Length: 315
Ligand SMILES: [Mn+2]
Image 1 (cartoon, rainbow, N blue to C red):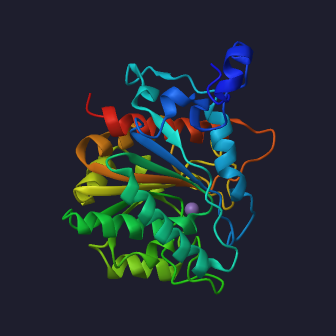
Image 2 (image 1 turned 135 degrees about the vertical axis):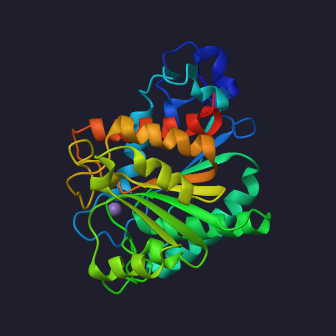
């Protein structure tokens, strides 16, 4: 379908086999139109403070590219999730004048995006995890302004990101959660690499930070109840892809052995979406490895599942 062709060319060239567009799912204009879309993808390929190995700025592009090859029919939910309409915004290129300026820019940009979305479900594709601090803050402020109470953040991650700044940068990928403890409570799942200081932050704030250690997840499913009970009514979901075992997703800056697998994670997330109101999500820290497509595809499919669960988790 020649969705992006100018009208003047459509009649003459409309039957040619044009490549799919490069937005999420390669969706054509009819199914991805902003007005009718119920979900919106915002790529934020921001990378400044990655500590080990880089490449997260290529994450959004690889996720979008891989998403073009996802089967639209979802066997678990028995429907084409894409029918909800998924619109992909242009990528937001944040300022390079330091992480503090970039964070402020994203806070104000995302607040404006949220104000224009209405009830649409936003999913941000990072970029490094530093982007989640302004996303959480803007979401928390909007939820509070609408009388929704205090925001809970569900963080799937190998790391707690509870450092009070890292290598001189207050808005670092390693401190996004600490930076937002004033506006949100955290439930952190899959954690398996923390500093002594972060462990102390967890001990000092038992109500503000609930931790599900990765090794607990492999014993039985009791952690799922504990995690969901700790979540308030309104939830923001942030997925650092290093949450997954690196045998599934080696394409990330600081991989840690252990962590989440595919089906257990989906089972948990479906319950979260069914039992709580999830108002937004981000998926960050994919640093694609050229030629290794499976992790990119996993992350793209995860994003598709999140959108599916948002609208059909209880069905
Ligand atoms: Mn992490």
